[in-house]
Amino acid sequence: MKIEVFFSPAAVDELGMRGRNVVIIDVLRATTSICTALRNGAREVIPAPDIENATKISSNLSSDAQLLGGERQGKKIDGFDLGNSPAEYTSEKVTGKTIIFSTTNGAGAIYRCRYASTALIASFVNMSAIVQTVVEIGGTWTILCSGRQGSFSVEDATCAGMIISQVQALTGVDIEDAGLTALILYKNFRKNILSMLKKSLHGKYLISIGSGDDLALCADVDSVPVVPVMSGLSVKLKYAVPETVPKTDQPA
Amino acid sequence: MKIEVFFSPAAVDELGMRGRNVVIIDVLRATTSICTALRNGAREVIPAPDIENATKISSNLSSDAQLLGGERQGKKIDGFDLGNSPAEYTSEKVTGKTIIFSTTNGAGAIYRCRYASTALIASFVNMSAIVQTVVEIGGTWTILCSGRQGSFSVEDATCAGMIISQVQALTGVDIEDAGLTALILYKNFRKNILSMLKKSLHGKYLISIGSGDDLALCADVDSVPVVPVMSGLSVKLKYAVPETVPKTDQPA
Image (cartoon, rainbow over all chains, first blue to last red; front, top):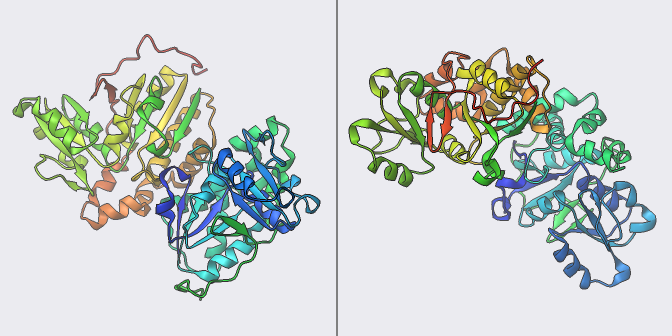
């Protein structure tokens, strides 16, 4: 297998991601919240690159079938139903609903992968489920870290490193500079993911705005064992290995 | 002091770099070659973002006062005098000359820093000289890694980590996610910089095109103890701490 890592979407656009097998990561907090919402019964999550786009999608859906979720500067958007804390996406609130979801980094990164061949949503909370799926499909994968406003974020890179480490335990993987760096980061932080989140720039920011409790949820490896996959513009839970994906470099 | 690291110029433009104190790194090989050329007596190096631009600058200079240097895909550009190997920039060739220099990543990264307050050219070969200058000036610094076509390269990030590590030995430094990652990388590779270069994507590529001997030159820490600084569009050796730079956070 081969895994390529991008530390931010800055050098990536939707045509560059077209036809690829992609894993998208935004540990703090978009991909963690998406996993949680779908595990708790949301029908689907539609990533919206901006608020205008979210409102437009919303206007085409009946109001009792949908929720608007997301953040700007870590805080709930005015007029939206939910913010970006995984703790808000409870069964009571989300069961059966379409979540239209707009966040600063993660939703945009996911949206850029709308023409990907396979696009999986990953975080620490669904690590093993993602790794298993990646290895089942095999071949070449791209891990796209959402980062922070076009720049690097340590939590997404460390999560990418954990995926590579776990895939390596199952099969041979070719990696390049960014993958190697992600792996070194993961080995450095593996014993205490929560402490790494607390040291991260965005983790510190979340603590400063009173959302520090989310860090423990985002650090809880394998606590939400789902595989969210994007199809069209919608992220849903159902996942089956597509028959059409070429199965190369299977695990030994 | 504070040091911010960008792993590639993808999210950076000349206006974002305006007024900053910047260190630009392209270990393989642009910044190593610039250090070597200036140490060996070149009058100045003018970074050109593309070949058209290089030719235009060249047409304004007398032919015996200049050399055209640089690469595309690691190889000398057709019609240019020199490639991008530090070994080519000998005293015999470069003494007294203006080098117009166009490379795929490094020259463009340097060019983006033309409105910086201070722009220093760094590589492993001039590590201590750069660290000393950075600490003397103090305040806030940006390390801009040239990377590889908008993406991450492990050798530039490791070099950034070595700068941070050496500055930390002299004074307190605030760093964020990318700086922390650079530092972890450096600690991982500190015992064998050359082996890291050989593992890097671009190092492997240089070996594949017969330029592998350059890696040892690029890994030779403190072998070219100069401080190239950009002023206007020209990189020259002379460096004096500008009186106008605010001296904050001096080393204890």
